[in-house]
Length: 256
Ligand code: ADP
Ligand code: MG
Image (tube, rainbow, N blue to C red; front, side, top):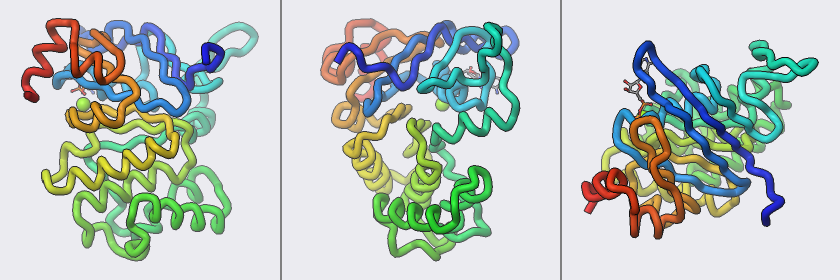
């Protein structure tokens, strides 16, 4: 196993907004097929870290590799250069992201929402995109909603469409940023069940969530972040069941 390369390799990732040092040197490896759940209090930098992986923020220092790509940069004649917009789009195709706010396009049907990026941005053939979209709708349990309008769906259904939409570009890595935090409590379970299905299919996932039960059951590894650093990481049994650091203990005590 030791020769397996990580899919994600974050090293010393630092990010500030003005004087506010939000990420103070994050190191994280995520291996192919792994489900890594990031826990941590509000304001600890979890979203900022995911946004750095997906080109939504520029790091101030450090590097992130996803596969062979160095996020945002390329090496030319031994010198790191910032990527062009076209090359950034190419890197982003390997990464899908799901947000708290699902933000489906309201004027498009479910199916149109899912095929928009693959066809419009990434130039997949229309027939392939449609076939894949229908497979994804089956995966998220919404085969009967292909022609529905987003406003006619529940929040849980809309978030499952958003997951299908993120998967439509065939990403190697999926990022979830509190995907159930905007949902009514009775709709959380169906979204978590969809994420379990994806995890069981071997998708590599980084999930920021406050759903401790999901972390306990679905995570291969739990990472606890606080104050812009990784405080503690390990198996769910270790980090949730037997946290070593006082900050992890204090955070988890709220959930008992
Ligand atoms: P978390 O997701 O763990 O709640 P965030 O990554 O959203 O934390 O935020 C970490 C810190 O960065 C907070 O103090 C927040 O106010 C700040 N922050 C996040 N985004 C911005 C931004 N675009 N501009 C200025 N400050 C920001
Ligand atoms: Mg956040």
